Image 1 (tube, helix red, strand yellow):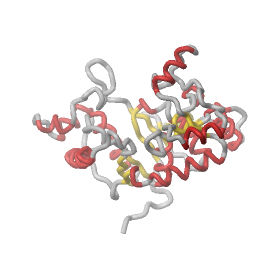
Image 2 (spheres, one colour):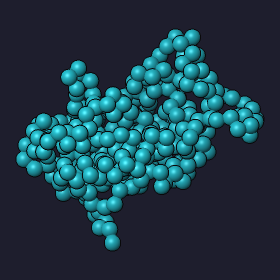
Image 3 (tube, rainbow, N blue to C red):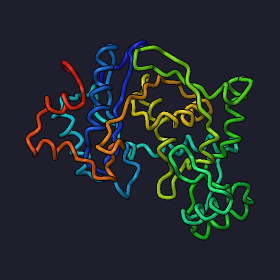
Image 4 (cartoon, rainbow, N blue to C red):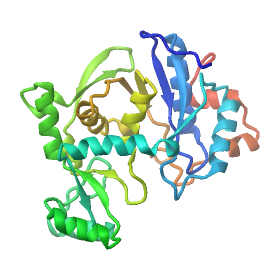
Length: 303
């Protein structure tokens, strides 16, 4: 029988995507999470974020377990795999749909880029073109006709309407007063942080290939797993405003967040699987020990 957390027991999680081998950046995040969970007397969970069916592979899932075991990272229960919980994400999307907050988008990436460029390119915090609203307001009958014809589509969140409704639900005076979260600073201080969700535009809430997206899955799963502390890299700090919007709209609990420094390469860029960052298993094969990784990442003592 799984040990159940007490009402006051903190819960942390490490949530890698199995679309490549783990690198030093992942090692840092896993070790930071484990250290914080132990210091708080909390539980530490593993979540496999494998909704990207085109890139996720079983060999990478097995490698995640091997690499984490080599690092001495352990978890308090069996991992949750997102691919086994698609129904829950669909139910969450249906709730947002019933509020009139999502709509189908039939645009291809090239079409979005061309339209955004024509309208004067605006970039979201990740550096991608802000969606130019091509299919926002599409006649429902026309949308159903295109769906019936087998045309692929994604579901997007009408961000302006979502922000307005979330603000109303929370009883705040303005959107920016509502879109806040509790951020745990490097020195352990708890601060109120905020950002503007409108900078993201109408994000994809459900992809064309699966009935969810990173943003939808992460908030549903954090609530499902009882996560109280979300500890992740600073590259995700601005996405937190999206997650807070969804938490308010879906009546989900609000975790405490901590966004740690990233492990950078020789050029000052964050390590990335897509840029072929050196994997932990390659370092291990080259003779590195757990102690070498700990020293490289600046850890002292046992993590």
